[in-house]
Image 1 (tube, rainbow, N blue to C red):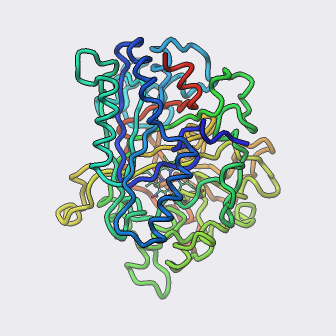
Image 2 (cartoon, helix red, strand yellow):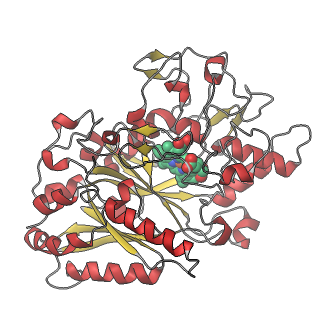
Length: 483
Ligand code: N7H
């Protein structure tokens, strides 16, 4: 069985959170840092701790006590540069991690400038600097998180003459207010579909695929790179962080200006349908594969049903009537398009566990009126997997950015034959055009699946920073990162 006391809590259970602060740091004094780590490690929330916290939250609700359970949970993660700084030279066998995200940004398709061979992504200044690690604190309210973060900063002497780390930058995420608290800024319910991990998620929801732990945790059953990795990497996981800004008024304007015209649909309903077809779910979370033309909020909210679908044999038939091939959830997890016959491809190594949180304010009247973003908002995207090469990096580059995918997808079982005249197009949410070309998607109109719709030049999601990290096990923290 998995040793839940040894695995950081965000990976398998997710830190319970209304707000979360990511504190990016550099190690400035290695010896002092290792000594400080000994004090810090007991603060790190484990997966076993998360299971207990969940029980406490359930009990709180059962007893109908007011407010939230006061809580602040801490995890820590290191970049390749951080490992180097600490003198840890083992190869973790992931080239994206070793390269670092700033250098990977060109391949990911991030906007930026090229000077000779050097590409500089158009990121916020702190993310262009070296970052050694990130300490993140999630909790029920700002006061709980502040208090905890102050304790942690105190341990590392931050801001004093005996500091062992210095702050590079910090970013704060907050779930959205009221009714939309579980929805991301475009308005869609998020956090519905993550894989269940064997030996941790005992009762997967209908339609929720179980994967072996080694697809998320290094050196566990299923990790194809296990043999190449050092012993201490066991039960750690790679954390991909992306600072993603969302152009919400512009996205809304695009939907409002391009309603899908179908008999019986009002203009407003036509716009909502376009949004649903771009994502693959209605704002309520209801999958369009189950309810293609009309939202069904009860279905969207029902965890027993809202993930219980696949795409039938529609890919084989080239039929996008129910869900476009380029819909965000179909691009990033094509389900039986690849896993079903005739390919029967195994894509468990493409699964990631997503743990993001929103940042920034609600859209103001002024922004809505101007159809233009004036205040930064979006998603602090975080995901875990036992390989960034096979997970995030691959999904972004070879699926979301690739207009042909999943048609012509090359899998271990061979390519899918081209479909008559249908090029699926970009993932309109996260697909990046990688230096030119017209951004198009097909299949947005259920009655006319071959018609292309052209997306505006300005992407709806804009990366402004990020890094790749490794979240070591507790025993690795004690033996390799502390003294
Ligand atoms: Fe995505 N969105 O609001 O449109 N995502 N995503 N994502 N995403 C999902 O199923 C969104 C991003 C995945 O298992 C939902 O839980 C936005 C990146 C995967 O069926 C919604 C941003 C990557 C899934 C969004 C963003 C992914 C998924 C449906 C950026 C990886 C699960 C809710 C600002 C490269 C698919 C749900 C499945 C679902 C949105 C980013 C991947 C609503 C706004 C960078 C694997």
